[in-house]
Length: 481
Picture 1 (tube, helix red, strand yellow):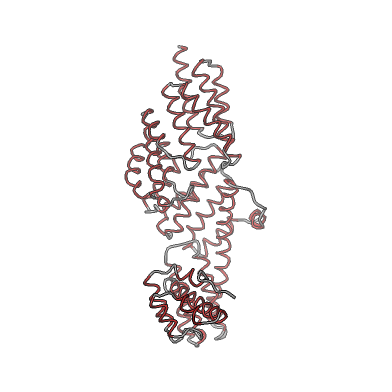
Picture 2 (picture 1 turned 180 degrees about the vertical axis):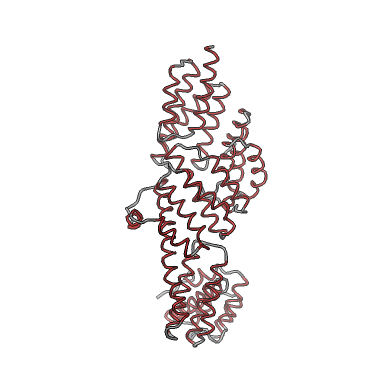
């Protein structure tokens, strides 16, 4: 049996820093560490930094060598676990309480649970707050049972029972929002049991009971409930407005992680409402994005992953709201936050957007041509900014040339979903009619174009097409007069 040098122990050990390697050797010397096959000689050899495998393989049989490495690996895994535990206060408290229970420190243990529940109720709200209170109350009840039924038992048992219901209701609504959002943008999975249960629940009655019994959590249940209602009935804008307004007013009461999750969920719901109802949600999206920045949440801007970095979206939405000054200030302030691999592309794209908005069409083309087309979103910006700019410059020849290249690109692209392609193909089709009208000026085609823009279900860049159609109609009216 051959024991190779590139075994599990060395794979893990090589990832340690010099300081951690020293700490590991000190850990091995602790008296309570179980190390029957690890002599002081072996520990000293590790500490010296000399070739351990050469030393061991020349001294021990393959079977003994395998046992030593097994023991070393186990000790190293224990070391890493302890190291992680020292930075994980929640797990540390959990293990401490197990020891309190084993040693019969009932009073200390009960005080631990009591303080934890109090702190959870008073600190910033997170997705796990209700769940953590339920878990703490449940553990507390288990300890109280050992002392027999008491006044404290009834009080904590009620807390345990109530928060089991609260967490279940909250998690069901939250998970429903997540699955409905995923269904909108990705694939439709199998029907979940919760979907059937949700259909028969009288949410408003449950919400009233919760709000009366636990008013300190009322605002968080209202937010999640109205977000849920927004997805069930996207045509009822008031539901979304209630969720958005209540959250923006109370965002500071949530942890940073949960705050970020809700901001992203609200933005996703904006997109869903816009897709399903054709309602202009840009003012809401702009308000949410600005609030997100005001709350110091810029973690998405430091992400290098496609779809997780929203730098481009901030610029795009601001310009849709005709606030190019805000877009420029955002670009100057936050572009340094961008990771190096995507910074240049995002800056050039933003400058292309801003220059196009300011009618500096030639400059917009220059900036967008600097973009390295690493992802399909870069390709879409590359083609559309040129199409928009050449169209507005009146350079129909170049506009048609880029349109043809764009059409060919979409046809050959294998990364895009069919749904995505349909939205682009419909844009190209209507763009062709716009170009045709711009060239021949037959006004009777405008009504058909307007109908198609308004009623085509999947249509990208609808806003730009609507604006260009309006400009052509106004120009046509003046010519007729």
